[in-house]
Every structure is written in C-alpha cells, then in structure tokens.
Image (cartoon, rainbow, N blue to C red; front, side, top):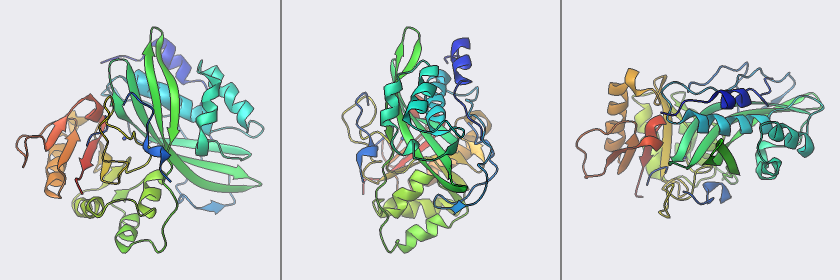
Amino acid sequence: MTRVSRRAALLGAVGCVCGVAGCTDRSPRTAARSPATTPAVAVSPSPRASHRAGLPRTTPWRPTSAEVTPAAKLRAVRLVEAIGAWRPGESGTAAARSRVAALHLGPALVGQAGPLLPKADAAALQVIDAQYGGILTDSASVLVVCRQWTRSADRVRAGGTTVDVRLVRTASGWTVTSLHPARPGAAVSPVPSRVRGILSDPRIELPPAARADLRSGQVHDSVLAAMLRLAGTYRMSVSVVRSGHPLDVFGTRRPSDHPRGRAFDVWRIDGHPVVDPGRSRTLIERFMRDAAAAGSYNVGGPLRPSGGATANQFFSDATHHDHVHIGFRT
C-alpha cells in the first residue's frame, strides 16, 4: 500500500474551506456526458432545499489506513474541495483558479468544474465518499461524491454532485488531468412509484447525483428492485448509480453497466465502510451474496465469495476494495 507522502499531506491542507460490468479507463469517457467515513455536517437538507441560514460547517475528507493508494484519493478530493467551497469575496473563476494553483495543479481544470462552481457569494462542500472508478499502476479514476451548499443574498441552497477525477502518477506524485462532473439529466414527471419508494426509504442513503439519476427515469427496474430488496435487510449508503462514473470499465474499451442505468455501488453497509473489510468481512460477504440473489450477475467488492451461479458472478480487485459493485444485464 502506498503511504501518503509528507508533501501530499501538506498539499492536502491547502484549499480546504470549512464552512464509479465493473467500475474499472484510461480514456476520459465518463457517464457525466449523459443529460472513509462521512464526517458530520451541521445540516443535511434535501438537494433542492432553499432557506435562510448560514452555511453548515464541514470537515475535510481523510483516507483511512485501509485505503489502496490513499495519495491518489487525497489529491482528487483536495481539488474538489478547493474548487467547490469558498468564503465571501472569493467567488468566481479567477479565485477558483488561484485556489487550484495553490495545490500545484493546473488552473485550467477550473474550466471543467461545471456544477461544482455555481454562481454564489459563498459555498461549503462536504465530501461524502471518495471511491475508485479505477486504479492502475500509473493512472486512476477517483469518484468524489459530495454535497454542496451555496449562499446568495442570505439564501442557502443545498445541492451537490459526483465528480470523476482522472489522475496520472508522475515522478513527483499523483496529478489531476481532467474533471468529469455528473450530469444526471432532467427529472421525469411523474416520478415512478418505485423510485418514490426508494427516495423516501430511510434505509437507503443516496447522494445528490444518485438521487437525480433515479428521478431522471434512466435507471433500470432491475436496479430499483434490488435496492428495495436489499433495504429490507440492510442500511446501505449508495455512492454512484449512473452518472459521474466512467463510461468504460477503467483501462478498457468495454462499456460499464453504470452509464446504462444497470448498476449501483454501495460504500457503507449497516454503518460499516466497505473500505475496512477486516472489521466487517462476514457482513460484506453476506451482502454480496444477497445482491447476487437479488438478480445481479456481477457483484464486486473487497473480497470474493466462493460459489455463485456463474464462474464470474463474484469478483474482487483493487478498484473494488472500497465499495460493492452490483450490476445487471437488463
């Protein structure tokens, strides 16, 4: 396992404003083209909430000791935190470019921030989770799942997105090459009853981009049915559904199930982060088996249960050390 270097840790402290069949692509194709433990925050309104209040206090995301190549995740997260949070008087593209330059990253990345940099007087951002969309020896995709609160004229609006951050390893460490924010598409009306059931289920925790994916009507019924079935037994925190994930299995040209609305990822089960399987191996294995029983043909995670209806129904690799991938054929 790669340890976070002293230089990376120092850079991580800069720019923090307190207030993704598998998931494994060297190419910048990402589902954004289509229309650790979560730190506590002071408020948790719905993504569409708007009210008079101050911005919530947030905490910088930190990798755990169980992470695979934590330096890559930390680099990606610090960039998203730097772009997506600012104090009054520090709004706009120019200020964001300065914050990115302070991380010794290319200021031009700000031009790819999309919904991460809305017009607002001030903003706070909380990273919910950072998971791999893919990790190879010299390249990586880190999916930074976040909530964001913006304030304009004493009105606070809650939202958030998921950003597919692409990185390469250089002689001096990991550097970011591109950003691909999620673009879930417009919500359908009326929202299907099964989707409404998932959105209101307290046992299914969904980040902003994933909720928008469900509302868009572009998530297959097999995914919806499996979510509801698993929620009958587990409390699960979903990280990624459709958007904000690489279009191809990372390092290949093989299409991923996520952009087609036929997969979802879970980063925490019954309060236990998947990234730390040593403490919850039995729970994770049982969850993976139940996901297969719910109809998934391709269940990946930090361990590989024995058996399965097909030879490759279960799989495990470095990319899936931090989440359980649950994919469907139809």
